[in-house]
Length: 364
Ligand code: MRU
Image (tube, rainbow, N blue to C red; front, side, top):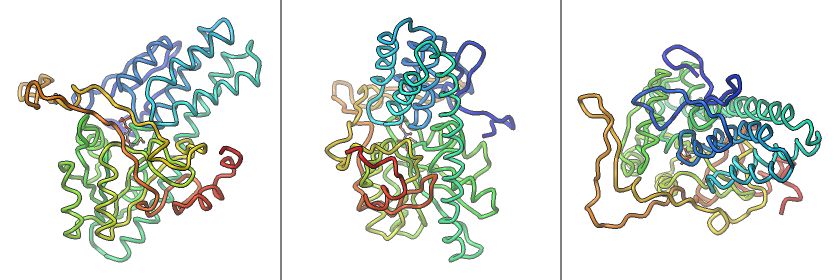
């Protein structure tokens, strides 16, 4: 996607290292960061310099290229792979990408590990971008259908967190249909949940949409229900960090509450994801999906930019009060109108999901 008119992906090979956009600095500054070792990649994922399911997976895939260069034995490679997998627990794209690398290297032979890992990483990144572009095309049809029912009026889409191009290699999942609709001349406006505690909506999604010229408004996290009650939301589209074979969706904390409000108000609630985000081994997401808990300081403190231009961190919680930081929740399949995948739209039933994805068979 374009940043100040220049096309970027979120991760790529730069000579002997892996180059990323440092998302901890956005939107205050647009900085690139070079990762030279597997340990650098692990820190970048854990500290959320890169984040979002697809991008975590693609960055870990490039990390496995560094691992192939660092490892002298298959055991060392396995241990470096494990050091990447444990960085974040909820988004399944991470283990999916690392395990795909291990399988490819095993098939090619350990002596061919570096070339194999490089090719596999590039393939994973290209597939991620292509899948998100296809998701955009399929999701566009949903927005087009809504627009046709209200000719000349703006279609209002609500989204949560950042499932934009910054969360993938390019295009994004939840935002891809929005970008496609905007490009097709359909008047769209996006309600952007701020997404406490890390504010990925207010910081990243808002920045992304502004870069692409898409009309949007940032709202406090608890505003969506009110807007739905007053006919101000035509459609909700979120991303996903892990989706079970029966359609339960793990996504950023607060997604479940949006889905409940959407159902109560008859607002369609779609989840956009590439097939790398399915966990074919799980059926019950509430019981089965591990929910990451992060440091309390993300809740107790807030980062922002002062009038002077300096980035500052302020405490916003009463000193001495403990805080808990659950990073994700699970929205049961019954609350999800449908999935937008690179293979097309899909109802949230195990039969429909598995029919669209033959790779699901034999995994449970
Ligand atoms: O904690 P993050 O920022 O890595 O969380 C991931 C997300 O941005 C959201 O949950 C998103 O909607 C799904 S990732 C495509």
